[in-house]
Structure formats: C-alpha cells, structure tokens
Image 1 (tube, rainbow, N blue to C red):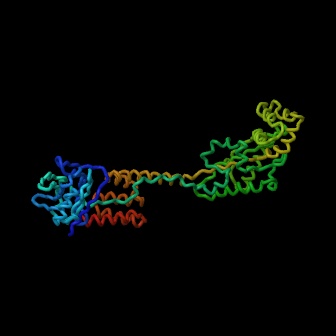
Image 2 (image 1 turned 90 degrees about the horizontal axis):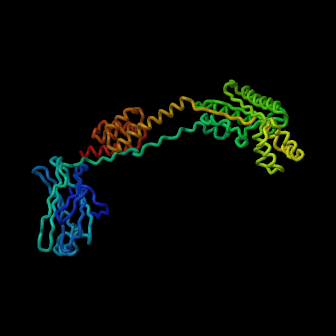
Length: 455
C-alpha cells in the first residue's frame, strides 16, 4: 500500500508525552498509534528550535515488536542552505521541509498496512542531525510502548443533558379569560378584590339601584355571563383540568344605611351563585362567597382617578373618617353636597355590582403524575449522559436499566456497549433505536461497522 505522509505547521501549544533529544533535535509530543481499517496510523508533533541554515534534521519512526520491525518514511527538516544543497545534489526536494527561522512546529502522520505481529508494537523514533561535513545520531528513543490504540470510535448521542421541560400549559385556552386562575394563586384571592384588579378583569355583573335581580340586558351583563359560562365549559371539557373553586364577591354603593347595603350586597352575590348553579348544576361547596358590603375601596379608586372638584377633601374623609363615625354624612355635607352629588351620578352606579367573579382550576392527579414520571425519567437519562461523557459506561448502563422501556435509553445503552467492544449487543440496540427514529443510532451503526473492519 502506498505510504501517505502529511506535514503541516502547528500553531497549538506543546502537548503531553514530551521527549527531549539531548541538547539538539526535536521535542516529540502527542504521539499516537491507532488502527484504521486494516492500517496503523503513526502520528506525532515535532517542536524544533532554530535550525542552522546549513543543517538538516532527519526524524525516522520505526515500529518494533520483538525481533520484528518496520522502518517508516523519514521526515527531513532542513535549513535554507542545506535544502538548496540537497536539491542541487538531485535529492527529492518534496520530501524536505524548510525549517522555520525561529522555533518551528511540525506534524508527522503516516499509515502502513497492519500485520498480526503489530498488536503490541512499540514506536521508536530515531533522530539524526546532518551538517555540511558531518552526521550525528542524536537520539533513538522508544516513544510509545505497547500502546496501539484500537479504531477510534466516535459515539453519537446528545451530549448535553436534556432540559426538563416546563409543565405543559394544559390551560392555554383559558388565558383569554383574565378572571380564571390556577389553584396555586388561590391564597391571594382577596388581593384580587381590590378595584384595580376588578376593573381590569372585566367580569362585573351590574345591578340597578337597590336591585338584586340579574338583568342580562342591563349594561354588559349578557356578554359577561357568556364569558363566565364559556370558561367553565372549557374547564369541564378538558380531561386534565378540574374546577376547584368559584369565588363571587358582592358589593353595594355607599348611599343608604350600612345595614341595608350589607343585605343588598349579600343578595347580589347569592343571586349570581344561584344563576350559575341553575346553568351548570354545581354543588354549593364549589362556591366561596364574599360580602364586600359598601364598596368604599371602589369609591376611593374612582375618586383618585378623577379630576373632580374637592378631590383631596373627599379622599381625606374616606381615608380618615370611619364608616360608623359618619363618613357618608361628612361627604354629603362637604361643599354643600356638590362632590357627593357628582359621585352619586358618576361613581356610585359602578359600585352596584356582584363583581368580581374569580374561577380557580386545578390540574388532575393523572396529569400531574404523568409530568412527575417524565421528569424522573429525564433525570435518570441526564445522569446516564453525564456518566457516558466521563466514559463510565458500567455506571451509565446501571442507570439506563432503570428506564429500559424508554426509547431514548436504547441508543445511549448501545453506545455504552459499543465502547466496551460488545458490538453484537450494541447493534441490536441501535436497530431498535433506529426504528423509533433516533438519528444518532444510524450514525453509531456506521461507527460500529468501521470498528469491526478495523479490528
């Protein structure tokens, strides 16, 4: 077989396996012997300090095993004048590499046919320095002893740990309803009763003054009721979701007595509950009712947002005067009742409501169990990948045996067996993995064939 010689300048730093050739010659680094499809490839790096112009260094690799040996193609690094002299003498100029003026790095790589006696071969490298009138043997050193490496298998698999995916949003269809929340937020349900949140979520059923019956034609009530019913139906139809709680808060505007307004707000929330029970046939335990009574928080919200006259005076009374100490009376007397009449017209109708409806859902135990099981499998697969990356194949197999029925384990387990040269077992697993669409397994099958041919 024709011998192949490759020489190239290296820019990398000096690696391991460093040998110094006395005071002259090359420093040999990164030497390897590797089987490649019926051949042995010999490769190493040479680091040479400045070589005088009329000298050349001859580096000759030799493979030795007992009484058997083979000499490989030498590599000649020549100074400028020495190379010119050799060319004039008719020597093959292509086999010479001109030395760098300063420190130079060179790579040697060549292959020869593999023979049986080479299975525990030693790499010996001989170095000679030749000047214009003399030739000196610098070193003949065993660089690698019985270190023939098998075919270099490159296993293919996803080397980075798989990211545990976020829990699938099974309630994505509910995102359009701002009044629908996962059960995990249930603890903060009373915070959501502030008018800032109620007005943003647009789920208010309004009542006429002193009224407690739902009139779908009044304001936007019909559309709100339709939205609430639609959201409840989505939860009911989704097998991964269960309805956990419906919270209804009832309020009244502040005009009139506290006792009467408390009864009105209670009747409003009960009316809305009864409406949903009739439409959806829910039990009473699904509801949580909150009597917000007179909606002073809502009134404060509207006053703060407004540019009404006496705004600061109104806010001070709401803030500092308790309800039972005559808060409403002071508002009615302020500035001859002008700000009170303004609020009665512009703000109080917004406070006569059984709004804010909050709906809470929970994911079913089955869905949560599936997520938990998947995350546990991913954790095991990720740990196995870490072991494979560290070449701890026995430990990786022990982990993969725990998820033996998972298709993602097939290729990984096959990699472990292939790297232990258990080719038949690895092949069986790669074929199964290929049947599941694992593209890494197909690449590993090709690596497996190369390894079989080489060995």
